Image (cartoon, rainbow, N blue to C red; front, side, top):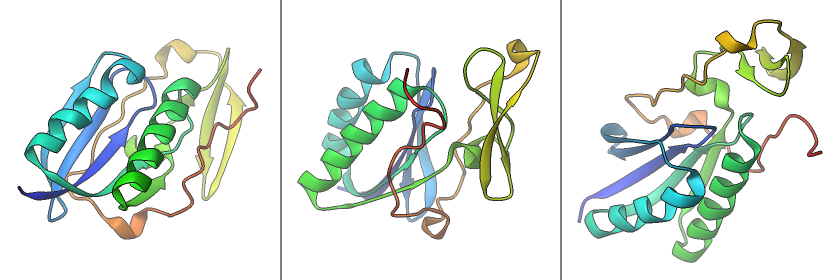
Length: 153
């Protein structure tokens, strides 16, 4: 079976899964179902066709539940299969555009700092994330703790 790296960008709906062979994107899965309903079955299908050698994911900010579920699933998968898990913040996948938070607040990234700002027209804030055509492991960190940005209520 081909050896691949898998990238998961599960920050809302739809969520994305990228399959990379030798660093090049060979397959993209765009999933409209909830992370809780789809992620395990996607990995079950991938395991039938590929040998997964490492995992990468967007650690937030974004949907609390999507981030939490993807982190728990991917961290567990990495431990069980003795493979590397690395992460990067969500701004890496949307050209550093604002990301919807709660109410009229958005997350913004200035240099290396993520803050929240008031934004009156949050209806026009999209969750338009894209997968890179090439996976660059050096852009990812082994600091995999999810970034929620605000405390759970």
